[in-house]
Amino acid sequence: MAEKEGAAVGNGRSPAAQSAQSGLAAPSADSYGVLQDRFSFTSLDSNSDRTVQPFPRSPKLKKKMANAGLPTQEQLSRRLDELQTERSKTAAHIQSLKKRRADLSRSTEVMKQQVRERFESMRSVLSQDEQTVLYSLELDLRQTRTRLDQVLKNWERHQDQVSKNISSTQRVLSESAGPEEDEEKGQNETLSPKKPDASEKEIRLNEERFEKLLKTLSSISKQLRAQLQRKTLLLDSSPMVIDWQTCHSKIAMTSDGRGLSFSGSAPAAPEHPLQFDKVCCALSGTPLAAPQSYWEVDVRCSSAWAVGVAYTRLERKGRDKGAKLGRNRNSWCVELRGGNLSAWHNDRHVTCQGVGQAALGKVGVWVNYEKGQLVFYDADNMAVLQRFSAAVTPVFDRAHHQFTEPLHAAVRFLKPPETQTWPNHLELCHLNNP
Image 1 (cartoon, one colour):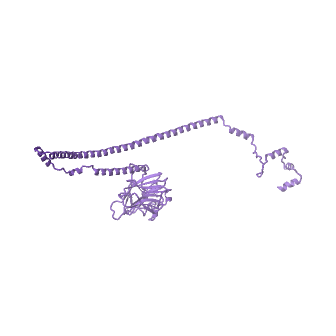
Image 2 (cartoon, one colour):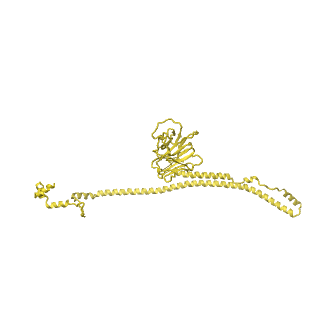
Image 3 (tube, one colour):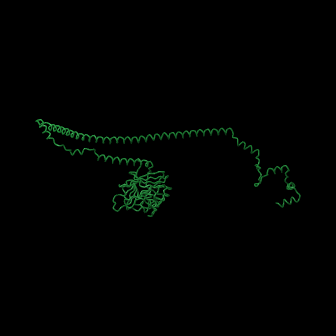
């Protein structure tokens, strides 16, 4: 191309002549200037501040754009109606939200009043019982005082008689004896000393009955405190049902999925992928869904058991630690073995505190997903058996208490003593009607 342009210049032909030769009309000088101005540009590396102007738009396009930018009266009217309707809907919704907010306050006040009435009823019962107990103590005092007053009167009469005898004797000593004095002297000689009766020692308050009363009130106070604490947990109670597909073949389950019985000999059953084949364990059917959950397990009819929670990925096959509650990172439990109660996680254990001399009746389990807390209770007195927490873990690895996966309720039958003859039974309690 450069060679052709050089040849054309070398031949002395102007661009206009070349255009004429090729059959095209050569642009005039004015049009050439217009084209030159229209297609002028500024190089990217130029330091010029001149603004690059865009191509001018055609009058037709400008008119079209102008018409498009100015909505018609009909469009504006329709748009105004839509905005007014939207404003009305928004105002109505705002009023609805304000009403709900006011209703929330009123509902809360109603709930508070109902709670006050319940507690006032409890205080009324306690006050009536207090008055009854105080009256019984006052009655005991009156009866004891009456008996003691009668004995006191007898001693006072005896004291008066002794005083009279003393006076008469003194007169006899100071005067010459006469018939009357002799008679009085004879009477004085007949007065015998009075000795305390043994029955007087029995006149006292019924202290044995009072001691029994104090013990009973102390027991009621502990039970009341436990029930008041338990009521909060019952608000988070979750119905637990065992998944029959997870039960070991030696575990028989009731139709409602709550009662479990261990049998030393059981008929062979086809294995299920979710079933424990070696460890006598079972899991609940659905994982815990609520942020906080509480349930109880009745363990009175079993002498060797484990109660806890586990992730879904707890192993189901084999006898390794991966399938045993508390022996891995996927499960937590408390277990009773050989009469000793201990808490287990990640194959570490501690002896449970707060265990009384009496055998456990029910084990309460409370899970808080958000705080990463798991607490086992003695459900009869709400004593804490063991607390697993992401914040406080003196023995166990706190990194494994965040509960990043869904949890299932879990139970396990341990090997019972050879001398055991009673049924080996565990049951998940109904908590709807505490």
